[in-house]
Image (cartoon, rainbow, N blue to C red):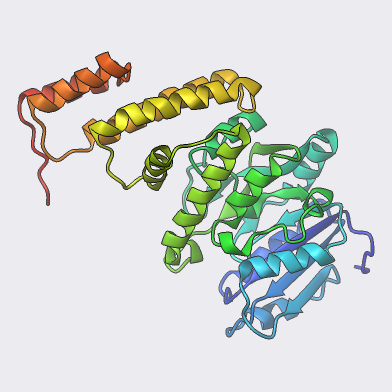
Length: 345
């Protein structure tokens, strides 16, 4: 195949020590039903057979960039964004598999939906037949982003002209949650979407980067959730910020005294969304789910229960209007009456 100086898609594939998977990953791109693309593979100074495997391919659509030293994943992504020739940037990792019609389906969708700047796809975990359920529309995605990332990075296709607004599209300080940060920033430029069809097979394994750097990922994700709330232009008090940080961390304890702080935050969120940045009905449900999550952490994540705990819940319900769904409220009442104690193994 002749070199194409005008590819419609630039596929960006950063690789590092993925000799066991990279051949299958590259083949899945070269075998796409849509063929007008360049494949930019950037190696981050691998010390295994990754590069030699890539060099065994003779397809002229491949452009292999070998970095002399390891400078990180997001640096690789940013460099490839600067040299990409395509109208669209397609992401791919060196250990995943793109199904044959992935590019064809994404191009068709993006060409007919000019308001969409990022198009991800549904995916499956390799070795697991269960399909991952993702939000599909922009309104659904924005709400889900309030809870965490919901777009599979190696599945996306992005309009390059939008990425060109940034000197560096990917924030190196947000790695390894740089994609979550990018989606939130791109909301200012257009809509996000996920296709319902499984078009990517995603690989997980024990020494994956995201598992090694879990604490960094959590810290970055926390900052990104605040960035998403910035679209509502709310002025938070220090007490409210402290509460939100503890809530976003998920593992932090929520106490009864936090409930009036939460109710004030809930009120601020409801008022600030009068611009309908978040779709009104979906956001109302988010606020309900937010409340249930806070009450669950406060009353249902305990090792010991007593009647006094249930009385505190009733006070929260009557004084602040915070309540659990009926079944969970009944469960809390029963555990409190019988002084339930969780057995630890």
